Length: 219
Ligand code: PMT
Image 1: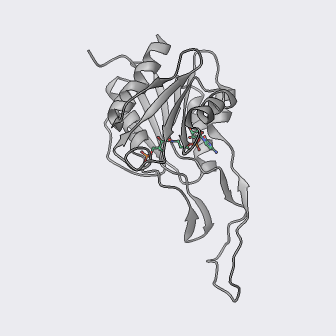
Image 2: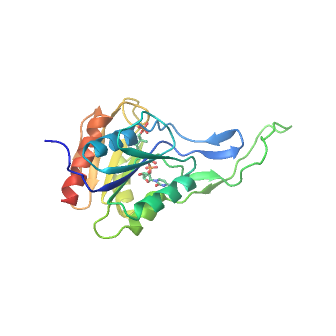
Image 3: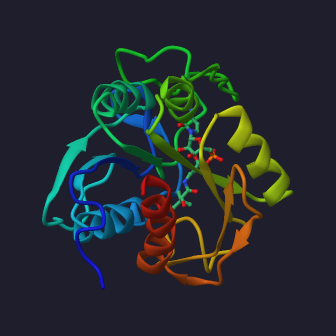
């Protein structure tokens, strides 16, 4: 039986790739489509949760989901911190830029005489890590790890370093899952249980598997 398992709970979910401006017309970003985050928001709403989806991309309108559209990592950070204070769960499915251009040109960068152009990048805040270290008893934090090598070991490090309760590891080196695909293949890591490998499935079913764990942990 489905429905009501997350009634009275507030979930904050991020989706999409953050965009970091170089000048008024150019930006750095990644291949995230927002599909994983939207699938999580849809399932959470079906389970009766109050859902806030903080996203860089507009996809289908979801019944019962409040959307906040943001662009940069810093904007996403501000929105997440604000919404998390009275939330029960945070799920960081957005692909967040680790770096941004050190400065943003006020005017379009021109092609001038030289062959090479160097862009200096500086580190962005880490939203998941900040929220992980901010959470109070009873609040659950779920992160993702997009990896192309040493998938489980890298994800395990992120779980503890970012103080998350669950870390969803996806191998994004394969085009049939991860970024922009309708399917995903993940392993769910948690604090006290063995890693749980999930077969290649549509993102909506991956979202169900993740939220099942969240429901059980909240109970
Ligand atoms: O959007 P789709 O096309 O559907 O693709 C889904 C996805 C592959 C993007 C998604 O499943 C996924 O893996 N999202 C996390 C991507 C990512 O940023 O991974 P990471 O290993 O670089 O970061 C680890 C975790 O820290 C993530 O939860 C990320 O949201 C978070 N993070 C990272 C950097 C940063 N500055 N702030 C963060 O909060």
